[in-house]
Image (spheres, helix red, strand yellow):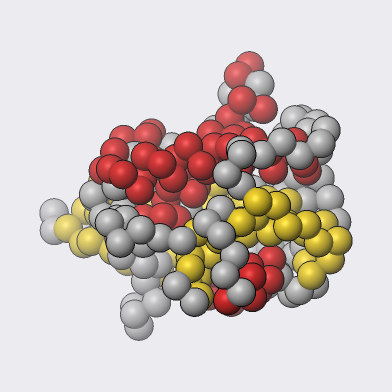
Length: 246
């Protein structure tokens, strides 16, 4: 399938690059327009949150979108939550309902299928622009990670990279319109419907010197923060961290 994009999206394709986010940053410096799309067949130095490496062989999806924010946009942390919802929108029609596979978001933005990671999101700022990077496993996934991973082919979807990219960009543009005009509260209920381990006990590593915090995942507030109910009844609001297996 050939790439089909909304009219206001400008594509920039590369056979290979170190990182689509790095290319997008350079284009942003040169004045690239809002919704400029950078996508590559492979990356040689892909990365995720906290500079973790992201394996990027040919056959999967690697893209970055350049956004030119309006001063009235909501606070940026929930842009990653919105992006994860767009990913769910794009892949949900591809997963056959009779398989009973669960598409969920592991807070704040990892998209999982039946508990296995499908994609990662990295958002950076550069030269007055916001760079939204997405990596999604389509034809293969790494098997040497400390957590389970999957890809769309393994889940029986059979779509190629360009078809997935077309669906994802379309979904992103739709979600961005709602988020930019109404903020995360307008998307919060959709996010909670897809939240991984909501109402269940979880462990969260916050990165603030604590090894982990345990509690029941009660909700996500209007700012995208996780609310945990601690043993004894107290609550803890977490703005950044990693959800771990119990």
